Length: 196
Image (tube, rainbow, N blue to C red; front, side, top):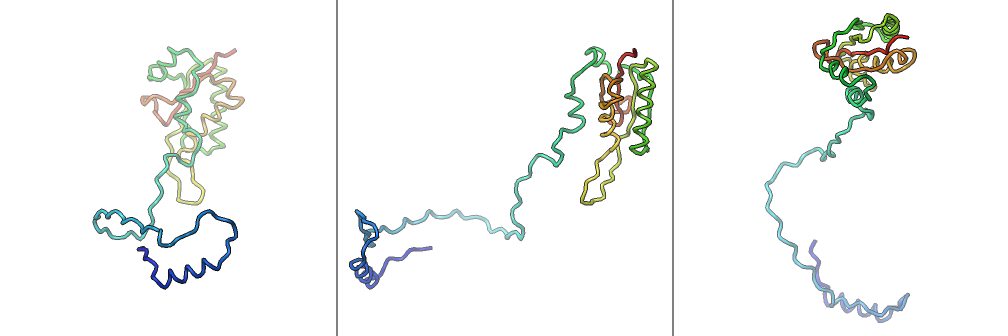
């Protein structure tokens, strides 16, 4: 917006008002409209290409974090403390150890899988086994777009939690994702404590 200079009539009117007006507070300076300098000329604008105006407002920058504030399951298992012999754990991670028993939980409900897993782990521990394989499967995409998201691979996420709770925690020494030769991300190695 361009500012205009006051006309002679406006200046005359201003002087009449200021001569009769009494200040609310004593000021050391008086305002003189002729002393006001005109604004400097704005810098010339750069020419830009005429782009069609978007009907949508600019979206905020995407944040990297997801809605799940807890670390992902693979991150938690990788950062978990190693409770077993490191050399043996290295062989386990490379798939060089053969599981002594396995259970496949594919297609089971959570309730049925929990009961089956509990029996399997406790009986394997009682039999003196050290390494067992728990196959959960990678999970199926079941989210139908509803208001509540459905976790991908429910058993895959639930089994490690069950293994850290009693009575199974007393028998389990270490949990690790299985090597690709034993099922990869759809299975877990469960290294059991020595039987008493």
